[in-house]
Image 1: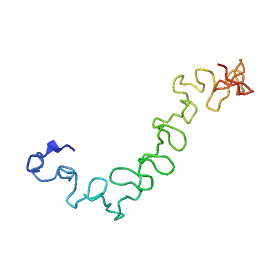
Image 2: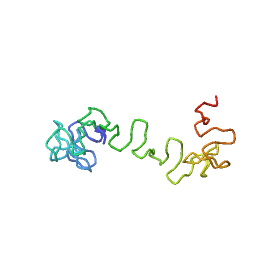
Image 3: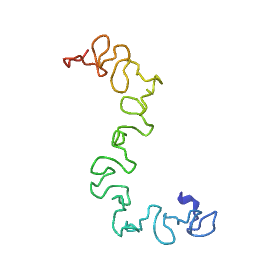
Image 4: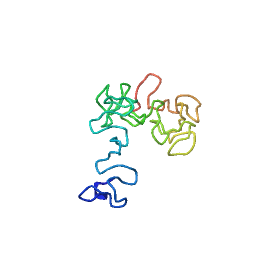
Length: 149
């Protein structure tokens, strides 16, 4: 909702009233005095009567318990952490940090194996073990934990 939808006297250009089509005034409040998220001008939530909604978020979208956009477990209101992964380890497109979907399909290859030949569980397609033909795992380490670099 843009303030430019309202004239200098606060009347909405399309509705001819102090409220837009969705029922909010130029400041974003309804006839009852609450914004789209249920907060009044003082930041009090309609359902809880406190500065936080039922999910613990204040009018600015921060968690009351942490003062940030992330809850005590490190997840935002949409359920994602700072790196963009949900509690199960998948991003908003359904891929994990190794670019595998829940069904095991890889983002780049569109098969059950990544470009190095490892599947979602870290098994190599040729050897059938956690190590490739050269003895390195999906992260590039050998059985002794030495990096191939």
